[in-house]
Length: 144
Image (cartoon, rainbow, N blue to C red; front, top):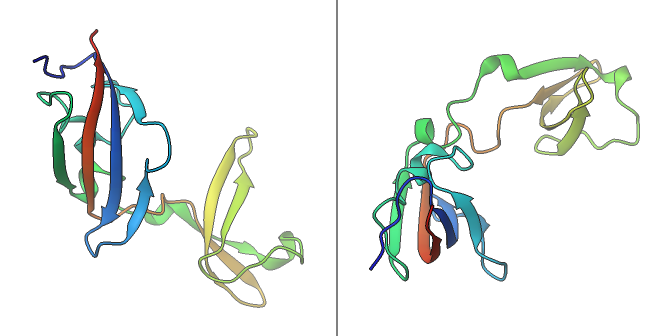
């Protein structure tokens, strides 16, 4: 039976959870995730867990934060003047907002705290600094 190698396109079902069991993403009810192994299209720790698998194989993979979304970068947090944010925008901690970079790119941010003068926004990936667990099932291999 064929084994996955770098450059192959794979199709897999997955459920991603935090170590406490909280699910953060899953392909359940959707088409399998499709990507080229070794191309950098997914987090490094998951990409390196796929080679050698065969169709129908299931695997549980635990990935440390450094091989997932990395550690939080303090420079990705910024306090902005509250008057620069429209009054109808909710600013409770944990609220996800979308900002625009100077070059027009959309950038998701999370409200960390807000007071009368400033709002602190965090542009780190929400899973930065977290160890992750994936239950994966290889559905198909399109050989390179």
